[in-house]
Image 1 (tube, rainbow, N blue to C red):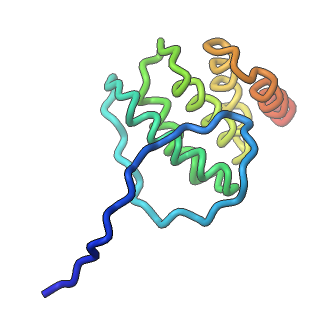
Image 2: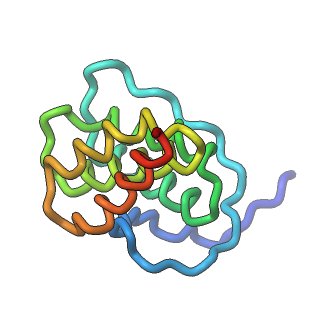
Length: 137
């Protein structure tokens, strides 16, 4: 008979870190299967926040290319008209992951939209946008 671990699972409480927040290196997360793309037009902000937190962890670890598809799904989980802070974080993280993985042209649109919907830490977002614009030429 298979043996099971009776240790309770820790509560899964995703938190979305602040863009530009100082971070410390973390152990790489165990390989997780790529989350499924939400159907077009489906808004699920809670899922968006969870995916954004996962993308942020990858960005912290310098795994920018790996963060891009997850960050895309996070952004897609919010309505385009959202002004939620979690949507703002998701836009910033997607823009950052795209820029740092060598796609500054695409990053610019997400960083610009992030500046349009929130005034939180605009200096950090503007700095990333400036880097993307410089890299894009």
